[in-house]
Every structure is written in C-alpha cells, then in structure tokens.
Image 1 (cartoon, helix red, strand yellow):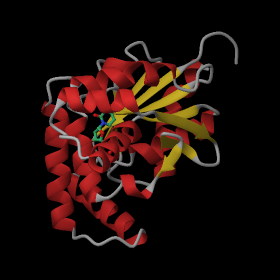
Image 2: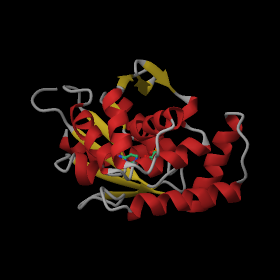
Image 3: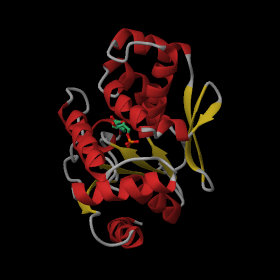
Image 4: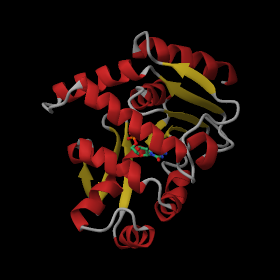
Length: 225
Ligand code: DC
C-alpha cells in the first residue's frame, strides 16, 4: 500500500459484536485494529485501584498524567492495553469495571487525554478504529464509517454466553438492563456521544454469523481498493 494510511471506523452500541467485527475486518484487510474502549476500561481500572473519585474530572485527569496507558496491536493477540507497562485483560471486563468505564468516559479530561493517542495509534499502519466516537470525533475524515447495531435481547444473550464461557456469573435480564443503561449513558453524554457519524453505513448484527456480517462490510470496502 502506498500513500496515506486508510482509516475505517466501526462505532456502535455495547455488545453488538462490533469488537469481533472490527477485529475480523482488520485481519482481512491487513490493517491494525484500534479497540478504543480498552482505553476507557483501563482508565476505570486505574481509577478503582487508586481510590480516585470517578466523577472528578480534575482528579481523573491528573491520575492519567501520572500513569501511562498505551495500546499495542499484533495480529495474533489483537489490541491489548497496558497500564504502566503491564497488560490488563480480564480485570477490565468485569461488570463493575464495565459500568465504571462508562462513567469515566464522560469526563472531558479523559476524552482529551486519549484523543492524540487514538489519532496516532499504530501509524503508519492503516487502521480499523472501533468505539463510540471514531467516525464523529476522532477520525471525522475516515474513508468508510460503519455503525453496528443489534437487538437488545440478542446482545444480552450473547453477552451472557460470553460470561458463562469466562466462568462468570450473570442472568440475561440483568445484563439487558445494564446494557440498556450503558447505551443510555454513552448516547446522552455531552461530549462525544455515541451516534452514527454522518454518512455511516448502519450494519445490523442481530442475525447471521460474524463472518457473514464481515462479508457485508467488506463489500463496502473493496470497491475503493
Ligand atoms: O466498547 P467497550 O464496551 O469496550 O467500551 C467501554 C466503555 O467505553 C463504554 O461504556 C463506552 C466507552 N467508550 C467511549 O466512550 N468511547 C469510545 N470510543 C469507546 C468506548
């Protein structure tokens, strides 16, 4: 590939399968996968272990200045996030950390801190950038923008299966309530609310396999070469 790197954005609601879709799309295209939610999840984890008030814009901003949260990408392992050089994984996906991530993601200090990090991530590789505001705020000039949705019941049941596989407890009704609450928080916040970017291609991932949905997405990408 020559010239400027290509950016494809994949935003969407929680547990819609957009991470898996973005990762597969990146693999198929030979691009890096930028999973931006990991930055907010790592921030939430740091906030909880540091005992900082998650509602304090200044305190959380200050905490981020004192620590280093960074992303790595490899084809084998996908996107990984590290806090002060230590990779964080399962501790980021607990229900508590997931809810806290949505709270800290509202803070302007947090969003400002991660803006340049996301924009420069994995350069000069082309990137499939996944999150809530990739197409609206971080990469407004992206070549192609997707917005992934799926029915709440389908999302809750998939998340439940994932939790069972990870040996975690949960029930579908509570998961559905929490997903709906998180979507509400993410889409109604003042800064960088989750919404489809102008011109975004809306992809419904309720039915069909991930591979089928990726093929649908690739069909939009391929014509531009
Ligand atoms: O995609 P995810 O579920 O891992 O995201 C975790 C949280 O981070 C979610 O509540 C929304 C927030 N987030 C965000 O505000 N902006 C992004 N670009 C990505 C995630």
